[in-house]
Image (tube, rainbow over all chains, first blue to last red; front, side):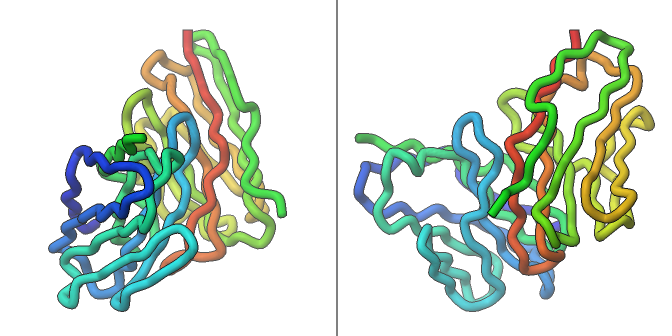
Length: 107
Length: 114
C-alpha cells in the first residue's frame, strides 16, 4: 500500500477556497487516488477520485501532479458543513485510511 | 435508492459474549468491506469480499473475528468471546467493484463491551 503524508490539521474561513495537499510518492501505476471525508459522528463519505487527469465533481476538484506523487483536493467555497477529516488514499482495491487532515472552518 | 444499512445500530455486550453484526450492501454491489473504528481514530480495515469470496482478511485482529457473505449479498461480522478492546464502531461499505469505484459506507454499529 502506498504511504501518504497529509497535514494533521488545517483551517480555512467560510466561503473561501481550501487546498488540501497529499504526498504519495510510493504510489503504484495502477492505484487510483481516492479522497474520502468523515464528518463528526458519521461514516466516511466518498469525495472524489482520479488516476492521472484532474477531475471535477459537484463536491470538489482533484488536481494530480504530472508524476502522480502528490495531489491536492480543492474545495472551491468552504462551508461549515465541510468541517471534517479528509483522507487521501491511493489504492486499487481496499481503502486503507491514514490519519488524514482535520479541516476546521471558521465562520 | 437505499444505501448501505447495518444492524443493530447499537450493541452492548458483556465481556465473553458472542455478537453478530449485519451489513446489507447496496443491491448489485460486488465488493463489500468491513472496518473497525475506535474512538478518536480513523477506520481500520478488517476484511473484504468480492461476491461471496473473502479475498483479504489481513486486518482481522484475532481468530475471534469472523466474517462471511455466503450468497454474495448480506454479510455478517461475528466476534466471539468479546473483550473490552473490541469496543468500537464497526463500519461496512460496498462498491460496484474494485479499482475506480467509490465505496458507500453504512452508518456503523457501535459495539460497547462491558
